[in-house]
Length: 415
Ligand code: FA5
Ligand code: MG
Image 1 (cartoon, rainbow, N blue to C red):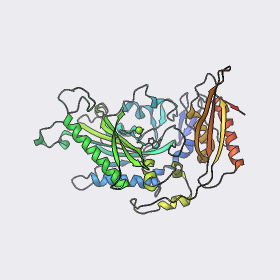
Image 2: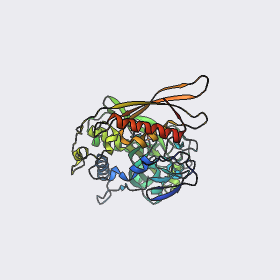
Image 3: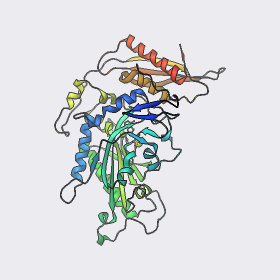
Image 4: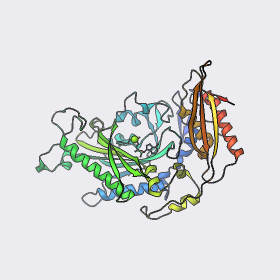
């Protein structure tokens, strides 16, 4: 078995990820389970449901935005390296120094300089710098998160950027301006540099484009609503939610790009909109796939259902079969002076249990009145998507999780 990388492994150790070497340091927290899955690239596997959704979105943009000769104006980047610098993932997008998303407990770090992108937006400013005005970025993204049927530490996003000049946005005779002569006040509705008129027309374009995308993906009767949102890299910002099984589900975030980002990337004469959307959310709803882990299945009975030539072919997922769950609890004392984070424990569970893990939840915690120690009890639900697990096999994994947690996190397992 492969050892999990300790969160505080020796500062001299080097690690190899995607054939490249990185010096580890106090930030290193990438796990073996993640490294092993990085080459899968579900969005590039022909006929994989994530790939089919990608094809549907790309086709929508190719048809919707065409140039003078009928050529698509958007170009597609779906093969960019998911290893990025913290500068690309955060600083270039104006994410504040102390923003929660930078914490070690939320992202996978190779070291203090390199990380696995937490969103495809990480490539936005480089692509603008290279001269592009209209592009889509599609790729695998990585986040340390809770463990359940809709959360997996690797998922896929599609980002888009569309930049326009004064001349492209407003015909000469309209006498409307994109930029204020001198930066105005920043308000809830717009940035200081932009005019009300420009923001109004751009947000109309953005919203109708995304509403039509939702109708293309989910059918003309899909119920949707717009919700005000906040992102450091757009203002104003919104989220689009769709009705799914009677509940509102967040589909994407979007907004008018921060002028400082656009200007720094060399396109200061342009105004733009951008959005970022989760492909699993779309695929689960389009195909009625109940569990996010199914996308990682290599079972032919699953994959063959999506062997269609046209990505717009209607496919309704037929459950291969549902195998029984096996539930096991684990309780331990947390080391008194450490920086224990639940996500460190979740990573160990994932690394050891792989896709046998359906859910991990904290079911009890208390502080020992005399010893002043905190105890956590986690309930781990085991279920395999392709077979029935035996009690013996689950116990072996469960014990190994306890052993790793003791070794790596310094907890002491309570019997
Ligand atoms: C972002 O990642 C922003 N970069 C999106 C953006 C881009 C906004 C450009 C503005 C301009 P957020 O963390 O909300 O935002 O994720 C975007 C989408 O990814 C969500 O709406 C959702 O569809 C999907 N998503 C987020 N977290 C998960 C998850 N844990 N599992 C599955 N899908 C997720
Ligand atoms: Mg969000």
